[in-house]
Image (cartoon, rainbow over all chains, first blue to last red; front, side, top):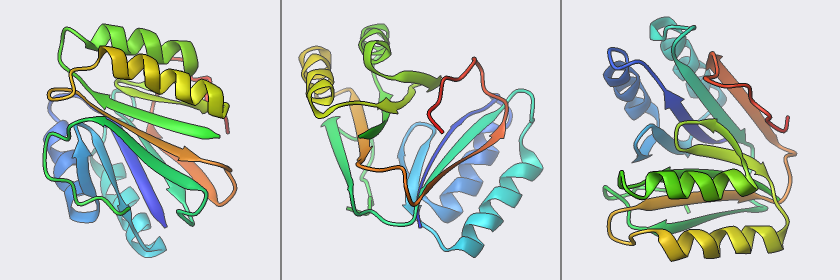
Length: 87
Length: 87
């Protein structure tokens, strides 16, 4: 499955969330990750994040898609870092 | 089509990008918008954004999906503002 993860976190937890997300997905922009994950890896990611976030102050949205068919990825401007994006 | 828009912009242009995106999509988190758009509206959004961004400093990614089938939206933590999300 293809995953897009966006997060909004308190300053103290931001580096921890970044570190965990980097193990599973590609960093594409501040607080935005994307990539392909198995069901098992996606569950593990959610578990790790669930353990460290502050449920009142932090917010993580994970969009998942079983297929990239019917989709497009359009960019404007220039990426901040070399992207290893999927398509 | 369903659109997820994420952006990373210079401080001077951030409010302008925010204002334009708000006309077309739902704000869900800092620098993250989502919503349903027609092809025409999506083109108009891209045109407006293309006119104001600094192509070297700013970066906008727009993911589009023709259908929400095969997809899920999972959240952890609490949203910063009342969400008007789609599903």
